Image 1 (spheres, one colour):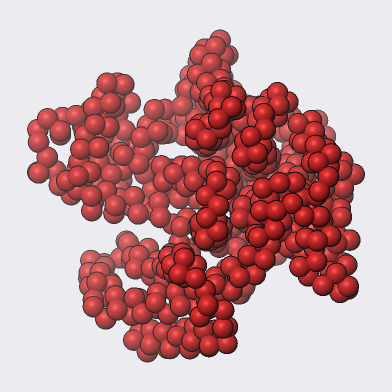
Image 2 (spheres, helix red, strand yellow):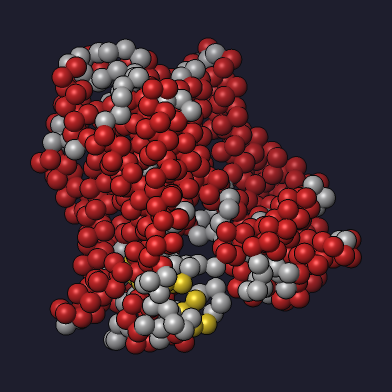
Length: 628
């Protein structure tokens, strides 16, 4: 990075920040609390934007030693670090001004979340006689829990998604889904961790068996229709409609339970319908996309539980049943889901008072059924091989492998012996990859490691952290990618790709291995490239905006208003953050829950303490609808 470029960037951002500060007088009258919180938020947002430049250039990873040494020296130089610090400061000034402005606007509506006012009074914040206000009111009238209006909202979203679904079609079958379809169609169970076949089994639970059965049934439907890929088309249509439905329900809850103006709710609707990132991922056959609608609906039910707990209302049996059912189905479609949902409910139980037992039951039933009862009772008779234990300790394996590679002579003979029982250090060194722990799992994990060996290994992992925190940080630096401006949610890929050696070539005849369809090649690929380059689409599709920026700003506004009880609504996203920090690699699909639940996150500061309308009966209708 040239000094001129850094100075130019600093000058531009300083100028913008100064102008905003001068033309917006409310900055000077903002309270100390507002300024402090917004300073912290702006520093985090600016750092997530600028600091990724400190990361090593991946293109030099396999380059010459001289090039890597030069890059390392350049990035550690005083001038480089100073330029980055100045850019962070300048951008922080600009973001700070924007946040103060947003907080002032939002405060008008957040103040109304504390009192019970009529719908008309709420909307009078804007000019009720303006044409735009009337248009927003008419459009927003279709966003409620009326079945007809839910259907209309669902259709609006789906119709807007259709062009992207078509150009990204006929389907994108993920690598994981390919393994699952091979299991279902050929009877050959291929372990993606061991990279070989598992004789004597009909399936493996490394990828959820529920998803395998679902994809297999739609594949059979395609064969029945005379074109195997047609079954995947039907699956994509179904999951897209279901995802659109889940967003419609979320928007209906937001409009009913929050003080957000109608214009904001309608804007969120059209944003969800028109941002290409949403349908781009709905065109993929993968456990993450299959799971998404269930998670969104579970979050809506969780929000309703928190809402009623804060009002000291008893949770109804029907609501409890719905939370448990969606928690179980979510866990069956994506195993890590039960940890997020279970821990969120357990944390809520601490504040549930008279609902504590009911919330605790909702928290414990899904993980017990999904992780214990179903594997213990069904896997053996159905000949389903369990997933490998290395998946759960992939990040510790990556970190300990890094220490073993760099600091092997410093380790005690006892520690070396315990590490070698779980990790083949030579294989770990040979296949080392700083961007993923998958390579340690695939090549270095010892299959004969016992549960006791893994327990001792985890104890060593915890102890070595205090000796080699730098190595631990460097080994898992990829875990920070979702929290910085790096990747986007814009995506396209080949119709099918991978696992040809396991029988993948027999699937979907007519589509070559890793080849793009005509629509993907001529439209989708250029579109993704264009969206990633042109503002504001490049920013609107950024992973960090949804994973970090929106949650932090929502939490910050809650803290500014001292409404700390509303932080309970953010529990699923807090535990999803922790889940992201325990994954073997970074892929954008792992954080899709933040993208599809962004509206629920935005709504947190505006959630009303009482019913939106003065009619108690009206509030009871909404509760009954959610219970049903």
